[in-house]
Image (tube, rainbow, N blue to C red; front, side, top):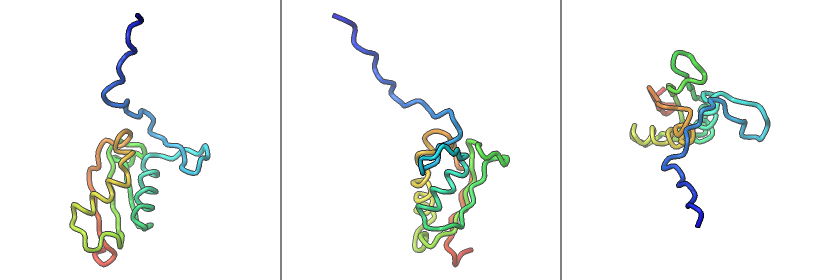
Length: 110
Protein backbone atom coordinates (compact mmCIF):
# COMPACT_ATOMS: atom_id res chain seq x y z
CA UNK A 1 0.00 0.00 0.00
CA UNK A 2 1.16 3.60 -0.57
CA UNK A 3 2.49 5.55 2.41
CA UNK A 4 0.00 7.79 4.24
CA UNK A 5 -0.10 11.46 3.27
CA UNK A 6 2.04 13.80 5.38
CA UNK A 7 0.32 15.20 8.45
CA UNK A 8 -0.80 18.82 8.38
CA UNK A 9 1.42 21.15 10.39
CA UNK A 10 0.26 21.71 13.96
CA UNK A 11 0.20 25.47 13.39
CA UNK A 12 -0.67 27.34 10.20
CA UNK A 13 2.26 29.19 8.61
CA UNK A 14 2.64 32.83 9.60
CA UNK A 15 1.66 35.41 7.04
CA UNK A 16 4.84 36.84 5.60
CA UNK A 17 3.23 39.66 3.64
CA UNK A 18 2.77 42.88 5.52
CA UNK A 19 0.24 44.20 3.02
CA UNK A 20 -3.37 43.10 2.94
CA UNK A 21 -5.89 43.16 0.11
CA UNK A 22 -8.66 45.65 0.43
CA UNK A 23 -11.86 44.37 2.04
CA UNK A 24 -13.95 45.64 -0.87
CA UNK A 25 -12.36 43.14 -3.25
CA UNK A 26 -10.27 45.64 -5.18
CA UNK A 27 -6.60 45.06 -5.84
CA UNK A 28 -5.65 48.07 -3.73
CA UNK A 29 -3.24 47.09 -0.99
CA UNK A 30 -3.32 48.55 2.48
CA UNK A 31 -0.67 48.55 5.13
CA UNK A 32 -1.20 46.57 8.31
CA UNK A 33 -1.50 49.85 10.22
CA UNK A 34 -4.28 51.06 7.89
CA UNK A 35 -6.05 47.70 8.07
CA UNK A 36 -5.95 47.66 11.89
CA UNK A 37 -7.20 51.23 12.07
CA UNK A 38 -10.13 50.49 9.76
CA UNK A 39 -11.10 47.31 11.65
CA UNK A 40 -10.95 48.99 15.06
CA UNK A 41 -12.94 51.95 13.76
CA UNK A 42 -15.65 49.69 12.33
CA UNK A 43 -15.83 47.42 15.38
CA UNK A 44 -16.09 50.26 17.89
CA UNK A 45 -18.14 52.71 15.83
CA UNK A 46 -15.66 55.57 15.97
CA UNK A 47 -13.36 57.52 13.70
CA UNK A 48 -11.20 58.57 16.65
CA UNK A 49 -8.61 55.79 16.19
CA UNK A 50 -4.84 56.12 15.92
CA UNK A 51 -2.68 53.13 15.02
CA UNK A 52 1.04 53.79 14.75
CA UNK A 53 3.70 51.34 13.63
CA UNK A 54 6.79 51.15 15.85
CA UNK A 55 9.41 53.67 14.72
CA UNK A 56 6.75 55.13 12.36
CA UNK A 57 6.90 51.98 10.21
CA UNK A 58 3.42 51.47 8.68
CA UNK A 59 4.18 47.76 8.29
CA UNK A 60 5.86 47.23 11.63
CA UNK A 61 5.13 44.11 13.57
CA UNK A 62 4.71 46.25 16.72
CA UNK A 63 1.92 48.83 16.90
CA UNK A 64 0.58 51.42 19.32
CA UNK A 65 -3.19 51.98 19.50
CA UNK A 66 -5.20 54.94 20.81
CA UNK A 67 -9.02 54.75 20.64
CA UNK A 68 -11.81 57.00 21.87
CA UNK A 69 -15.22 55.31 21.69
CA UNK A 70 -18.58 55.52 23.39
CA UNK A 71 -18.57 51.70 23.27
CA UNK A 72 -16.08 51.74 26.18
CA UNK A 73 -18.60 53.36 28.56
CA UNK A 74 -19.04 51.25 31.69
CA UNK A 75 -16.21 48.87 30.74
CA UNK A 76 -13.07 48.15 32.76
CA UNK A 77 -9.68 48.74 31.14
CA UNK A 78 -9.11 45.06 30.38
CA UNK A 79 -12.57 44.76 28.77
CA UNK A 80 -11.80 47.74 26.56
CA UNK A 81 -8.51 46.18 25.48
CA UNK A 82 -10.26 42.90 24.72
CA UNK A 83 -12.66 44.76 22.41
CA UNK A 84 -9.71 46.20 20.47
CA UNK A 85 -7.87 42.87 20.30
CA UNK A 86 -11.04 41.18 19.01
CA UNK A 87 -11.20 43.72 16.16
CA UNK A 88 -7.61 43.00 15.03
CA UNK A 89 -7.44 39.30 15.94
CA UNK A 90 -6.70 38.22 12.37
CA UNK A 91 -3.73 40.61 12.12
CA UNK A 92 -2.44 39.42 15.52
CA UNK A 93 -2.15 35.91 14.06
CA UNK A 94 0.34 37.01 11.45
CA UNK A 95 1.54 40.47 10.52
CA UNK A 96 1.22 42.12 13.96
CA UNK A 97 3.48 40.58 16.58
CA UNK A 98 2.56 42.85 19.51
CA UNK A 99 0.62 45.88 20.64
CA UNK A 100 3.23 47.88 22.54
CA UNK A 101 0.78 50.38 24.00
CA UNK A 102 -3.01 50.72 24.03
CA UNK A 103 -5.03 53.68 25.29
CA UNK A 104 -8.80 53.19 25.35
CA UNK A 105 -11.02 56.10 26.48
CA UNK A 106 -14.62 57.22 26.28
CA UNK A 107 -15.32 60.69 24.84
CA UNK A 108 -15.87 61.98 28.39
CA UNK A 109 -12.41 60.77 29.42
CA UNK A 110 -10.65 62.38 26.46
